[in-house]
Amino acid sequence: MLSQLPLNLEKVKNEDLDKEILRAGMIAELDAINLYEQMAAITQNENIKKVLLDIAKEEKTHMGEFQALLLREDKEQEKELEEGKEEVEELTG
Image (spheres, rainbow, N blue to C red):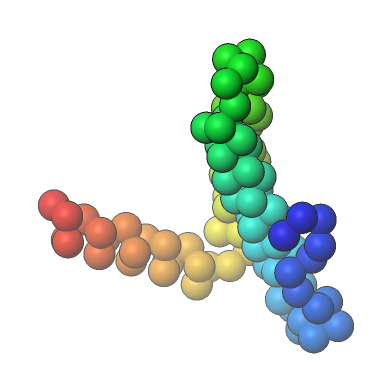
């Protein structure tokens, strides 16, 4: 993603705009988590590794914040998330 919105705001319905903003935030946080964890995996410097992993953990918190807001705004998303959890439980026990 690297600092670009993954959507064209002109094509988003006004009633969906906030949900799309939250999803874009989630994508940005996932990108950041992946980047920091990948860099931590390749550095030989333990101090850099510690800091990168700490920052990645903070990004996971940000991801949770965006998700919590999205679930408030999009009840269908909330319902489907729960159904997904149930399907995983059924398949994996």
